[in-house]
Image 1 (tube, rainbow, N blue to C red):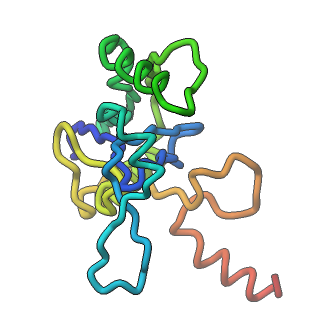
Image 2 (tube, one colour; image 1 turned 180 degrees about the vertical axis):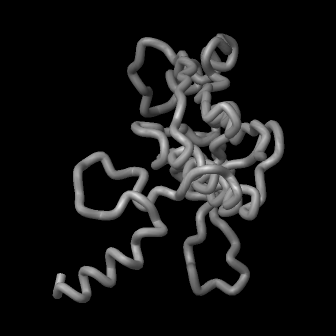
Length: 192
C-alpha cells in the first residue's frame, strides 16, 4: 500500500502543471529567474540559456515556492496547498518587486491560493498517483514529504487506470485503459 506523499510543482521553465486526474487542477510552479531553456536542440552539451527578458523581469522576485499536492492513497484524498497563502512577508516581497519593475503589474495584493481538498474514487486515485509519478520523474515536480511510490506499487493499487482522465465531455472512448485494445479492434473491424 502506498503511503501519503506530497509533491511541489517545480517545472524547469516556470510553467504551471495541469493535473488531469483532478478536475480543474492547475498548480503554479516554483518561480525562479535562473531557470533556463534549451535554445539549440542540436547542441550536444544541451546547455540551458536564461532569456534576458526573463532574468530582467523575474530577477527582482524572491524565489517563489510552487503549489503542493498531497495525496493519501489509502483514504483516497488529496489536498492542494500554496505556501504563499498566509505568508504575508513573502507576499509583500513579491508585491514590492512587481511594483518596482519598469512594467509594473496592477493588482490589489498577492495572497496565494487557499487550500482545497477532495476525495477521488479508486480508479481516479490510481491514475492520479501514476500521473504524479511521471511528473516527478520528468523533473516537473519534486517530492517534499513522504516517498514517491514505484511504478510496481502503483500497478498494485486497487482500481483500474482511466484512459482519458482529463476529458470533461461525453465521448465514445472506453473508460479504462485495459479496454482500449478491444475498442480499437472493434473500430478496425467496423471500418471506423
